Length: 181
Image (cartoon, rainbow, N blue to C red; front, side):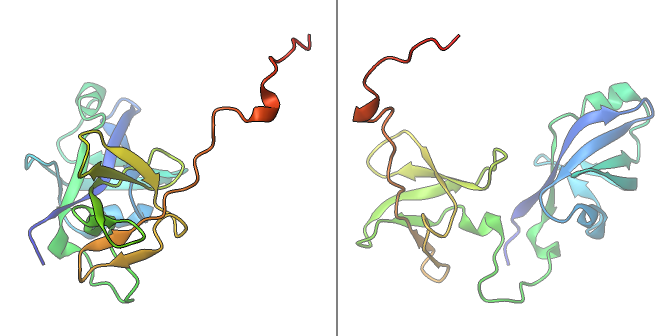
């Protein structure tokens, strides 16, 4: 294991006036208090005093955060834990999203075309942000079995089959749309 920090959750808006905040967990909601103190990338530590579920979020009271203004200052703060605190994976096909970052991206013929630099989720599923070898602009592909049929953690590589791109409009729709009102 390395001393990698794993993103566990992100603090959102305040909840009420007594310092509680909404927290979006990136995993099982009740896991937040299983690993001890959570910390920011720059080492500021947060201890959970209490928490309760609210839809797909948790409402959390951190020690030392007692008024709404203090809670507001935490909006969008990301919370991490040390990788070594996570449980060992039980299945061969299980992995942590963090394990994908830095993997080589191969095309169907096995040639390296880029590197995974992030795995964001904008709300519709995980995406791979890929930094191509030949270009400075990154691009995103959905992290699905169809697009990423092969993951090889021993070789630190994954194979992609980019989805067929959809044109802005097909030939049958060359005529302008009529106003139907």
